[in-house]
Each structure stands twice: as structure tokens, then as C-alpha cells.
Image (tube, rainbow over all chains, first blue to last red; front, side):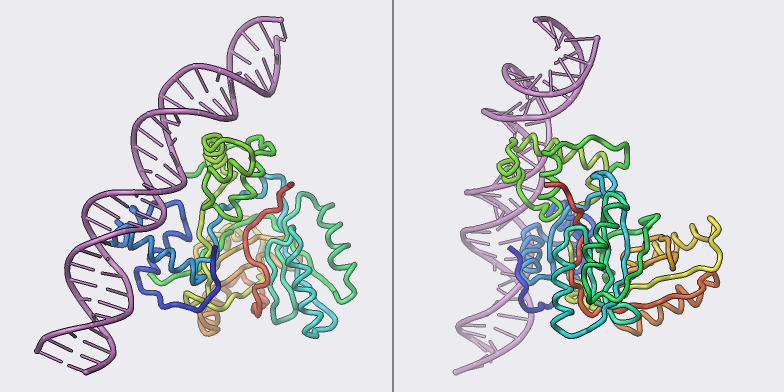
Length: 161
Length: 161
DNA sequence: CACTTACACGAAAAATTCTTGCATTTTGCA
DNA sequence: TGCAAAATGCAAGAATTTTTCGTGTAAGTG
């Protein structure tokens, strides 16, 4: 499917195409072509090239969590005790492997990890904290922020144009 | 295109379809059908129904920020001074309107907002803080976490099955 | 300057996928 | 049990995606 390979040069056509696709990738290539002034095959070739280069990492449907029984989104800042490479890597793997952990970032600052967690109930979150934080003796402490409003959600990257 | 309307009942077919689409929405309906044991038209009708109901909120391409010149991801916790409805709404609108603000959540806890910001340089972030936080006299303080590793990124919602 | 190579393009054809119409089956409920 | 509503599969039709092919342009070379 997708490749990770080397970075490729992108011109303004590519950026215009990306800007459309990152908002709606069901847009027909013909329509994209009309918008950016290229033929559909040209658009298609550029898309495939960007997919192979990993510029386009995935094509996904965005689901409303509330409508599938997962109405609670929570942010967690995690601070660890020891920051050895091994322990950090272990933590990364563990966090990444948990389905409820929708996003995980290793960060600088007053915390070491920031997690975005999606759960059906606060009870589920409490159980998760027991397993993930209290059950990990490299976790010094964690701070919880419960989302009351998902004001803006997405993965749109700001692009010139 | 998409509707927001009322929530609809989802059976295990729907969930199985969603589980495929939220990982790869370029999967042909025929393949989805073979996987979940339905005909392609049946799959198609279910998808359209879920799109109209807003269960599927969008279909998007995920772009690697680093390859389009936006290599820096930053988390910001924002604490406001006054939490009146008007000021909160104003803040929501302002944050949401900024392209560099990829995600914005209004939260409970030690902060009021959590932002995910994508920028090309630290200079750009600094300029943004000046505009968004120092330039807003309802912002009491903000805390910055710079991502060193995007361990897990996505919008995948944990689904039964 | 002539020549060649590499590369991207558009047009058209081919292949695949998506969409719709329709008869049938299943589901929910009285 | 029987009926009405809803969902299904099949097959045809429409649209999109993908490939093929010939052309044009730009870079590099003798």
C-alpha cells in the first residue's frame, strides 16, 4: 500500500491537490482536475506519487465518536520517572498499542507524553488509568482534562494557498 | 454534503464497515462486502445512510505535515481569566478559525482549552502565541508542549469487534 | 546546434467501481 | 399467522479510475 520512502518535491499543483484531498478525498479526480487545471490522469499520477512517497499517509473516514457509543474524549499529560531510551520506547509502544489511545505524542515541557483518549464512560477511563498509569511504575503522575466540547477536530495541515 | 441529523441505530454490519472505512476508505465496496458478508450495494446503502446521519463526518486524506513544510506539532493548554459563556464562545470561534490550530477542545480541569498546533518553525509558533494568547486579554496563561515524536496520530475511534 | 533522454502531459480506451431499478427475502409487530 | 416496512441480491447502467499511447517540453550531451 503506502510507502514511507524519501521526501519528494511538491509543486503548487500538488499542494492544491492535497488541500482538496485533506478535506474531502471522495472528490472525483475529474473535479480536482478542473479546479487545479490539470487532466484527471495527471491528478491521478500525482496522487499516487504522493501516496507512495508517504506524503499522503492514509485515506480514512472520520467517525463521530458519540454516535458509536464513545462520547468521552480525554486529554492526559503523563510525566514519567525515568527517561531512559528503553523506558521511553516501552511507554511509546504500550500507549500506541491501546485502542482507546487515539493519539499519543512524546513531548518536551512539563510533561513527557500527551495522550488523547476516547472512551464510552468515565468508568472505562478510570479502569484505563488503573491499567495504564497506576499499573506502570515508571509513571510519576498524570493530569486529566475531560473534553466538554470538541471545538475543532481533524488532521488538516495548514498549506500555502 | 454531510448531515448532522438524528442518531441512528447501528448493527454489527455497520460497525464492521466503519471499522474498515476509518482505516482505509479507499477500500472498494465489493471488498468490504466480501469481508462483512454483504453485497456491494448493501454496503453502499449503509455507508450513505451513515454519511447522511453524520456518523461518518468526513472522508479525508491524512497528510504528513513534515513533508509539506510543517514539521512542528505543539500542544497548548490555555487557561482563561473569565469563563462567561460569551467569552468562551468568542475564544472557541477564534481558535477554530486559525488554520494552524489543527484541533481545539474545551476542557475541564486545570486548563480551559487544549490546542494542537501545527507550524513550520518555532518562530511561527512564537508569532502565533503573540497574536492568539498575549493579544487576548482573557488568556490568563498558557503552557506549551512541543512534540518530539508523533507516536500515534489519527482519528480512529475504538469500535467493538 | 543537433541530438537524445527523461519526464509530464492530454486524449482516448479499457477496466473497475459505484449507483440504480426491481423482484425477493427478511424483519418487526399486531 | 399475516401484513407492512425495510433491507437484500442481482443485473444493468452510469461514473470513475486506471492504463495506453502519442506528443511536447526541458535538461543534458556530443
